[in-house]
Length: 281
Image 1: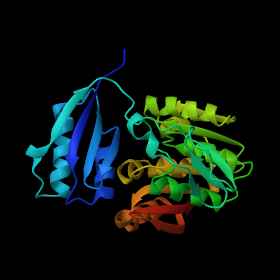
Image 2 (image 1 turned 90 degrees about the vertical axis):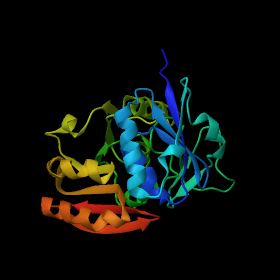
Image 3 (image 1 turned 60 degrees about the vertical axis):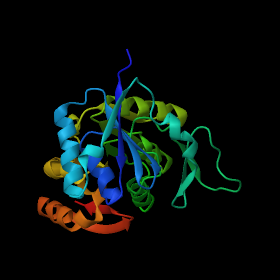
Image 4 (image 1 turned 180 degrees about the vertical axis):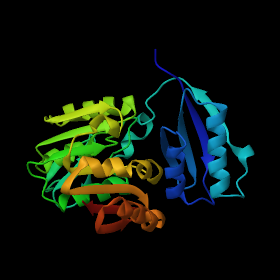
């Protein structure tokens, strides 16, 4: 039986919306539809509890103390794919010189060069339009991934795993704690006819004891910090760790933590409010 979902209607005037989006996802929201710059619909899972609600209220009041929580409107609705309403807004996007990302119902522009990654936006992070995804794919294109085994931690839609294979990686293991994300990743792998990629529900403990020459992690600070040691152990000597999901305002502190773990900073880039970071071991 399909589960139910909640819609939270939110006026975002007075918020830093990039930070707000990241914080709402951390608090458990499933996705966000931006009706306009200051009018959002936030999608919440059917098992949403009063405790979850208080977490969201705390986030809103911390980011904007003047916010009036009495203005929050939450509606319960039957299961529906919340992307269905805004699929029409997804257009092909070029990332770097080698890759495009497009939804299944759109073709690449005439004269476009490079390979296309087909992503069906469902309830998983990673459509190619977010700055963190772009930063990751740009970092990937700066490296030679040919014949390498890749770990994609927090695979989401599978977009980075598919990109890695198109850039020559020999194989990819994708892991995500969200079963719906893994279902979406499997669907996108089929759309792209991508082989040599395995995706699993789980966390980094799933690959403890294995070593990878390249690890991809488009994940937020508070999730990455406690697994810094595990990431170090899973990375081969002279291997590359590519990270985004880190706000530019937090990058210096994050880099310091990972340096103390043993990583060496190779490069840092910024797009919008977000940082892309490349470490070596």
